[in-house]
Image (cartoon, rainbow, N blue to C red):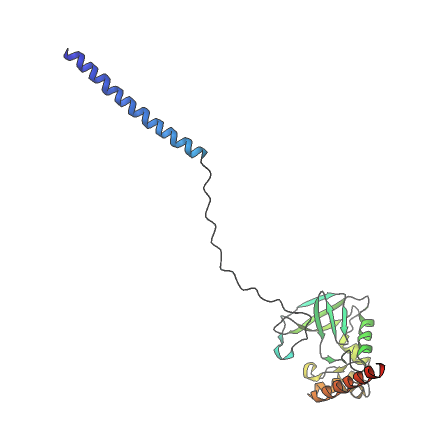
Length: 219
């Protein structure tokens, strides 16, 4: 009888051990199944740097500011067809360039349109090479501009009698090329160089008065 009870007890204990093993395997199998079919975990987004303030692009078409100018990096050049803005300003590849060392009449001043068309004639069909000498804080430029045959646009405009030397910037480089009475002809440009802004103001005022008188007469 004792042996029988011992045998039964061993069977029961063995069954319990087997049941525990089966339970552990079942739970392990369940975990593996869950891992296999679980959706992938999203990786945390990489840290982003704080957004920087968007800088305003320089307006290359604005007037060059000589007071804020500084020498350009050495050997800075651009080249290509030139679009003529006025008698001393061109654009190459969307960069507005003031011709080095000269002063031509403004478009609305005497000889202004003639100066523009003289420069158009020089640049038409040509690849102009601009060696940038100065630029201001907004990326606007001054450059020595050359035609393929080596002629410099600044010199050619002065020799044509449609621009004058600007010694403040050129050091007098083009003064010997000025034609006779060039400064009398381009008296407004000469006045600007000498700081006589009131001469410009008086000219603009007289021009506006004439426009009003003409408009009144037509009406």
